[in-house]
Length: 141
Image (cartoon, rainbow, N blue to C red; front, side):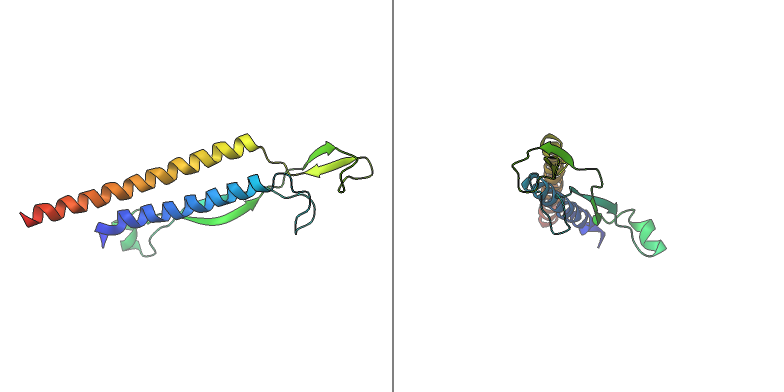
């Protein structure tokens, strides 16, 4: 049903951007976490998106893309920030604490970009719905 494929594509974008915003919120919530289940400080996570293609050659001709999907969550491998705080319970013998390497400004910029992409998909769904309503109205005349 090609008529609803635009709505389906926007729905995949909405889902992917929601997941991305959840990861960003998780990063911000753990920016001071020095103990994680993996051991050591929390590591920043980022979603990796990929376009979803049709499986059969004919499908690829009919529809170039079927949306977007989260294909992986990448864990940041960069070195943690070292903060001198000898009174912290996780301080090493030298008095430095390993803190997550998370920049709150960068995370907020990423969240704004995800929010704008989410809004664009909502607008696309609303416009598509309006077009269907107008088509139905024309058919009733």
